[in-house]
Image (cartoon, rainbow, N blue to C red; front, side, top):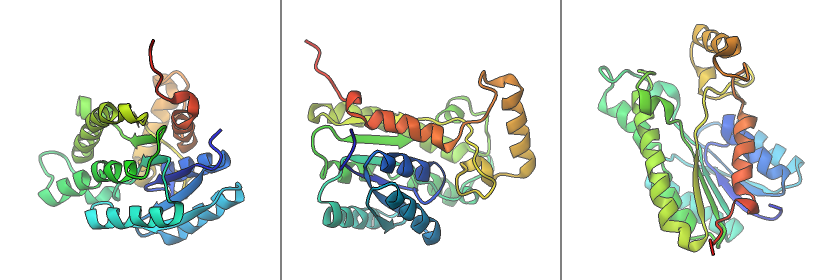
Length: 249
């Protein structure tokens, strides 16, 4: 159903982005793998994409820099000629922004907000997209609504803004048949090597264990944390033809 389509997934060398890349590749999507500094992980993702029968390429870029974003999309145009799916997943390492609202500096604040390259990325992506394109942002809106995770203040604010921007783009692009959605994961757990894990794997071990125990004790009905594959499955459903806009008559 998705065979032969082309996708860009930012932050796809590891974690949630990697899981999305591999899920789409298994359904015949050719994937542009974006990374910032972990080229070895990106190469491993690309190898696994090809093992699933799809093709792809590697793209290195700092998504806080507009010129890097423009260069990335120029490379996609040269290689793929078009783009059917754009998934915005990249974020900076947690130590660059992880401070409470009373302690955070402007540099750390900007590191969080500037990493949400969804504005420029969507503008560039849609110039390559035919009707029926898919744009998906990986957000995390819960903390932005409650303020409960104090050290997540900058990124929570950035993700709340990202949620809002998804709605604006959804309205703007609906006439072209392009859907825009946000997927907001909860706490995502993966393998201890951090290749497949989400942000939780970069936090202190005691915090990881407390969070896992809290979820497994019944705080959520499924009694487990989410996984990158859970998020990849949701993204894949939004990329399918059945998720297209339909005209009400």
